[in-house]
Amino acid sequence: MSTPVASPDAARLLADLIAGRFPDERGRFGPFGGRYVPETLIPALERLERGVRAHLHASDFQADFARQLTTWVGRPTALTFAERLSQRWGAKLWLKREDLAHTGAHKINNAIGQALLARRLGAKRIVAETGAGQHGVASAAACARLGLPCTVYMGAIDMERQAPNVGRMRLLGAEVVPVTSGDRTLRAAIDEALRDWVADPTDTYYLLGSAVGPHPYPYLVRELQAVIGREARAQMLAATGALPDVLIACVGGGSNSMGAFHAFIGDAAVRIIGIEAGGRGAGLGDNAATVAHGRPGVLHGTYSMLLQNEDGQIQETHSVSAGLDYPGVGPEHALLAAIGRVSYQTASDDEALECVRSLSENEGILPALESAHALAGARRYAQAHPGCSILVCLSGRGDKDMPTLQQTLLNPEHR
Image (cartoon, rainbow, N blue to C red):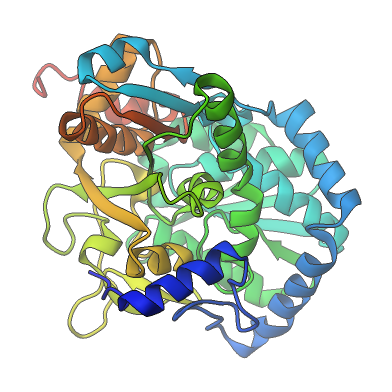
């Protein structure tokens, strides 16, 4: 688990984070982050960083981005009070409904934002990686919207368990490339996408899907996903007149959670909890709980918390949810854990599956397996804090998980 920062330094780092001083000029969030890539990629990353500075917060880019989010993505997404589950769990449960966004998850916010940026930077083609398939679908949709060719790398294992999303990507015009090397999941897909980018860093734009990777990606993804938290904060105040007691989201690489958390970091009265994939146990290879069981190291161009053995070898992970099946976490999450602003916990495969059933049967909402981990954390918190107000980022819908659910919840042997 990440080593906590001493109290005075933690307070200073939190103040710097709230004040917007991270990432710093080196692309670091305190001790985490940075840029650890082959020399051939440095010019591309520097060009991207210049583009982010020039365009991301420019009024014309923001107007274009906002227009796409409103007229195409379907924002703002709803805030739903889960009345029946609230009664059962003994707490007031609110859901930020990213499952209602176009393509079925939060990933579309980042995909259309980066695709707009890529077009401004003169990119001729887009490459992306995907695990659960939602970022791949979002990237394919965004590229179709803007007329950009798209190639998506996806691990062979993930292609099997997320077959519906593979078909969706192809229907949207993307080339889906199976990755049969390495662990054949998200980590291997990122490796292949990076290799593609290295081969043509001038005309190719790498549309990275999570708040990981070399600077400026963790910052860029967070800024594009921060719309989630801004909307949720305003919606909670409008609906209840108060902020929630606790905000909970699932954490893999960390894009939905970072997007939800960012607007609340400065609200000291709001407890923030990230739920990682506890899988089938605490041993290496049995989970994808990077903050809970990891150590600092470098993966995919950034210094953060990783699941690695004593020799520093990255370990294969396990989760029933393909989107959380990653051995690292974004550097901003690593900082938030180290300074104690966010509490990172785990939920097992079985807990997540049970929450898929609970939300489906009680509220008529089929959540993604990733989102169900956040629900498991919410149920646990409700049991310990009766009557509290809980806001959960429901990062996506569960249609994509039907093959897995057929083998688990809908299999008579599983009952």
